[in-house]
Image 1 (tube, rainbow, N blue to C red):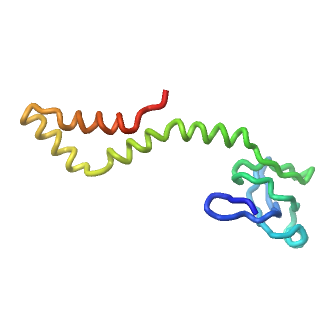
Image 2 (cartoon, rainbow, N blue to C red):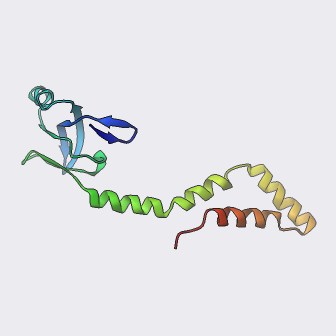
Image 3 (tube, rainbow, N blue to C red):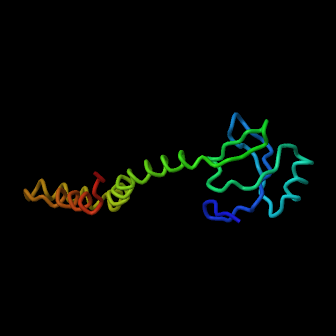
Length: 130
């Protein structure tokens, strides 16, 4: 069995529908015979689970093959990881908006830099990767 997201994918895939080279409908099974039986009823083809996340599966219906495009997954994962700091900052900035507005107001009244200091701390705690 292979892990997909939060649940475990079974060892065999019955690919029922393909659009271009993308799988649009499938079912997973513990055995090749169960996958074959599904295909006999619903059409498509049965293969061993290629692993990875299904948006990165590459289907070839004519050859009845299914592969995993790890290079595309790795590129997407790197891009996601590179921008994680943005999501972390956004999460921190979205907390207590009223308090932030209050900081800005009192900074204007008192000539202080409480809000600037607050922003600087969030940015230093969640630095942009170089």
